[in-house]
Image (tube, rainbow, N blue to C red; front, side, top):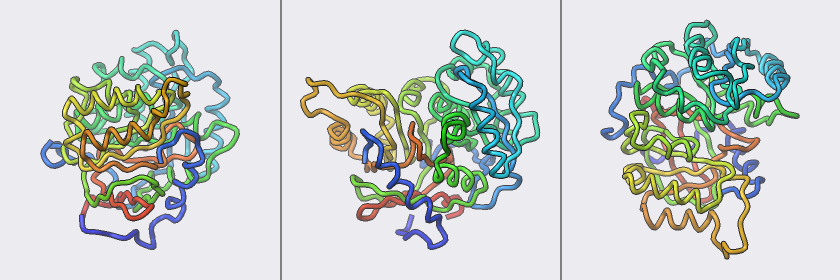
Length: 346
C-alpha cells in the first residue's frame, strides 16, 4: 500500500491502547493473499448492519462459574447489545462444556438463531475435537460474526481455510466482560470493530522493522496456529499479515513453535509478523539472559520477514478484536505501528 498516515478520524482510543498493554509483565514490546473467494467477508470498511445482538456459546472448556457469564450479559446489555445464551453453554462433561456432540450442536444452533454476533464464553481446550464435525460452508453462509480467542483460534483458522470467510479474534465473555471490571479500551475496540467503525488501530512499538504492506490478516494463539500445520484446517496464506500471542509458554517453547512454522515454510511467505502479548511465564536461572527478546532476535535473523512487537492483543486486559481473513494494511514509523482495517477497497 502507499504510505499512509493515520487519518484524524481514526479512533484516538485505539491509538492509546498499546500504551496500556505495555504495562503487563513479559510483554514484547494462496496466491498473493489466500486464494479463496472472499464473498463471505463482512468487514469491508462499511458500517455493518445490525451489530447489536450477541449469542453466547461454550465450544471449549466448561464455564467455571455461570455468574460470570450473567455478569458479562449485563455489561454487554448496558452497551446496547441484546444477548442470549445457548442452552448448553453451562454444560459440563469432564473438563469440557458438554460432550463433543453437545458443543458441535451449539455451533449449529448459533448459525440458525437471529442474533448477528456469536461470542464464545471462554477458551481453554476442546475446539480441535470438533473441526471435522463442522459444516464450514454453513458456518460461512450464516453470515454470523464469530468472536473468540485462544482455543477458538482453531475455529477462526479452519473457517478461513475452508471458506475464506472472516471471523474475529479478541474479546470473550468471561475474561473481558465477566470479571471485576471491564477494560475501557477492550470494550470500545470490540464495539467499533463489530460495527465496522474502526479504520486504523495505531499502537506503540518499541521494536519494529520498517514495513509498508498489505495482505490478509490471520493468526491468533501461537500454540493453536502451530497445532494446525499439516491439517486441512490450516490456511494457505501467502503475502499475509500474521499476528501471534500466547500465555504460560516459556520463551523456548515459543521459539520451538516458531521454528515449526518457519520450517513448514509458513513464516517466510508472510509480509509481516506482528507479535502481541506473551504472558504468565517464569524464566529460570539457567536461562542466563535468554528471554523473549532473544527469541525475537532469532526470528528476525532466521526468517528475514519484518517483525513488529507491541500489538495490544493476547491474554491481557487490554486487547483489540481483530478480523481474521480480512485484507489489512500495516505500516510502521518511529515508535508507532498502524494496522489499517479499511484496506478491502484500497
